[in-house]
Length: 375
Image (cartoon, rainbow, N blue to C red; front, top):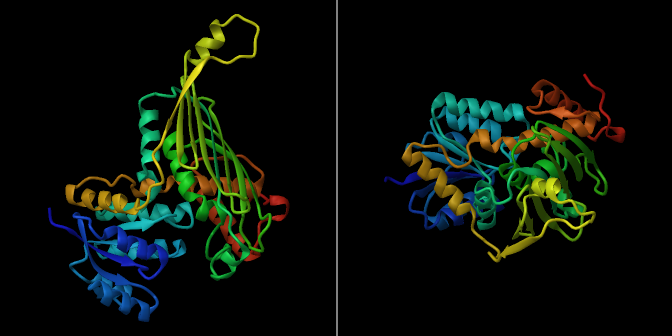
């Protein structure tokens, strides 16, 4: 099949360079050109790579050799660039998070549908061996019907991290903190494994940093059928921790800092509860298997490869705009709940959430005691 011509928007940033490295060696695509705000580094980068530098987005979008663009800019710009690229007939692969609000994501998805173009979201952690294994085990019913799950994603950030760039840690330019920026990968993977809840009760706080947005968030997620899950995201905890626990009728699945363990019950839980007549505190027996998969690097490459092959084959990419927006829906629900003190149903009321974000931009801080009066 003919290679997909790609261009990277935001190529001189850290993530842009990650995409350049990922594309190198893929047979499904070729790098045609680059675009970035900083013109000096842009032209130097393009010269070193032997590709074209496009000084403006308009210059890039009229290039017929470019079939698709990868958006590697800060997420507050994702909506506008996506709409412009789709309007120019380009397929779009956008970095996480998809945008700032669910209503922005809705616009992006609708534009792609209307134009019959591919819109993908780059959640590369789904392409890790550990994530793929967990999804496979759940699909094979290894843990059975899920009744409880939990997730912790804690990635410490210094005050200097926020101070280095004006847009970080602000409602006006980032639209959130630990949830939408640092925690979004883990939230996406969690909902991919466990599913989307029907309602959320959240708490958001600015605990330790001098920033406008949350650096700490907790939530209780309620699912159809009564299953419950807890979620914790923050940038205040040391040491860092990435952990997912999934408990079902047949056993449990754990991912602790990318080490995956499956616990298989000798007797399904409900059966054990109903038939075990002894008076004791001993759970059903189990056996455990830990999968040594090691630390995996370079997961952007399979994500980009899947997106390009989807275009070639006329199918949806693994992570469509609809799928990629689910984590943003969860972020919005937790934020709205944390600011109102109310349980929030999913999907989130777009008008209400947009109103909240507007208020947060004006005040530049979370509501006192995390209470925001209902509109």
